[in-house]
Image (cartoon, rainbow, N blue to C red):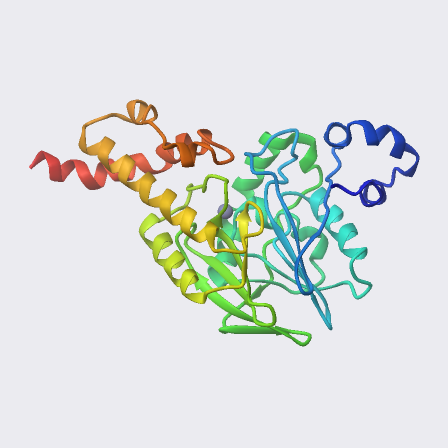
Length: 320
Ligand SMILES: [Zn+2]
């Protein structure tokens, strides 16, 4: 259950607790307050679970999972949410977990829901793969325009703050805790997965989704599937997917692989059969995928992202 006292502390609205108890989610959305509740998932690891929807005025863009990991030097924050306001709420939630503060931030990739809260952590190391850092710099402003358009006032004051430190090594030590670094790709051209050695917890970023349709605006599906194979080989004790609940059984890796295989095959079949993009949008979606969050909208977006390239790849061959 959601924690009234924490949300109240975040909002600084102690006097309205009674009113909030009636319809807390609606209240939080109306007041544009992020309701961030860390959920403990392993020894010294918490996740803040995002909504499994697309960006809306109701969720304020809080659709992403953020991970908090306790170390002797302070907490490590993996991904920071969609806005300055989210970053502030995240910092307040963290203050209730540890008095040591935040030692470092790590961004898994350059999508705006994962790094636009960086602004409140700009005095400390914000790690990412070098390619991610560059992409955040070059594409950040365009993402920002789009996020302001989608989320309006939730974004107020948000300024793009790219990661400030590149991770070049295969492991990273913060305090006494050691993390293995997996530089992968496929969801974007630069996707970082992180394994906490102490607990065997894998923070998979958006390489893994669970019961929420994967997003594909920058995807290379073949490379993404290869990365998922590598992550399966890690044999993690638990997985924090980029979107969806904590995964103790590897379901997120299997489900994401299955969805990508179906998506690729379905679109290829549509192209081969000579369907245009509008007709491809009408393709039937298997029940198991239709039940995911953000469906069928995410499938429709994927058709728009992927269809032109597939037509270029496939049509010349079928015309020979
Ligand atoms: Zn992403």
